[in-house]
Image (cartoon, rainbow, N blue to C red; front, side, top):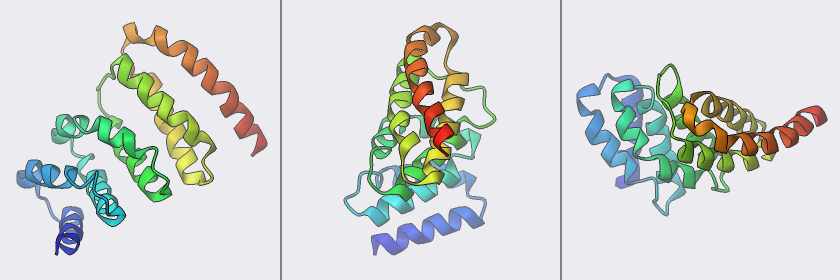
Length: 162
């Protein structure tokens, strides 16, 4: 019964204004991110894609950063693409600055995705990498400089091959 209920919840999120329930929904969904069931993880991420568009949930979504970064290493392309979409939505149209340790960790997780066999994952990861580099706090940019330089050359060669 849990899978159909989660599927129903995600569908309802997309159709109705449920702002008064968002915190409860976020808690329910976040518990499913580490489920052994790929379908539950996929549904949880679909729900997070919707919730991550709501600026009032920024702190709640931000608290899931480590769990979401773990999902970037998943073998399932759809899970990775959904996770990237959550991150992009979270950063979209916000004045949210990213701490340098988080930015570095995220940048390191994104570089292997530049070479993913799925072009959608590649494009989302490149877009997110760009957003992260633009939103990192000024005093944290220096540690990232080396990593960015090392990441740009392979990215250039990858784009040149295309």
